Image 1 (tube, helix red, strand yellow):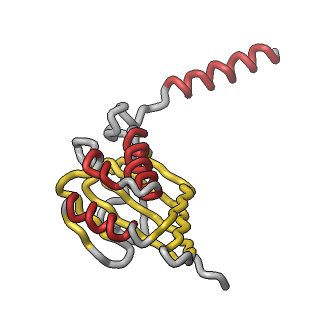
Image 2 (image 1 turned 120 degrees about the horizontal axis):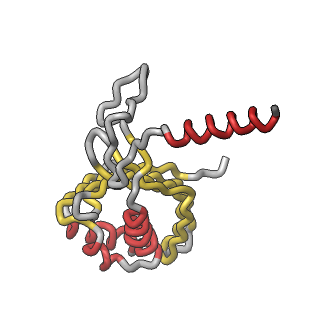
Image 3 (image 1 turned 90 degrees about the horizontal axis):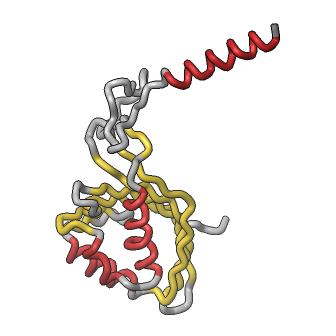
Amino acid sequence: MKKIVLLFVAAAFLAACNNEKKSDTGTGEATPDKKPIADLPYKAAYSSSFEMGSHPEYVVSILQGSWKDWENNNLDNMKSWVADTIVAFHSDNKMIKGADSLMADWKRARARYTTVIDTIDAVMPVYSTDKKENWVLVWATEINTDTKGKKDTTSLMETWRINKDGKADMLLQYNRANRKP
């Protein structure tokens, strides 16, 4: 009798697994069985329909280009991963348009530091199913040493939009200075 019950439970489990609907076509696009988040207390101004992205190469591009090249003061590689039309909204409320302007600004900013040490706390690719856009989210901590030897630690959150060509075309950056109590 135990074997029959066990067999029935196993069959029911396998049937449940086989009837599971796929919600991702492998291309990062949602299928019709995707359900939106219900009963949100606010309507998201941009989107509330995100899922895990299917492009880890975008994460590599952002971490190598934005983070590792910044840390190593090697910003000339920027053109390979940034769209010419990029718009960057920095945490200091500065908006920069265009790859050339962004590279010039970052080079000026990086010249203020003798060393930069970045620690990536978390990173993930996400896909907006309603906007059909790929994004990369990065949470990090940065320790900068300026030309006078003063160290400063900052927590950063960056949201990068990736265009259809696989290049970053928007940056939204937020930071919090880590002050000692």
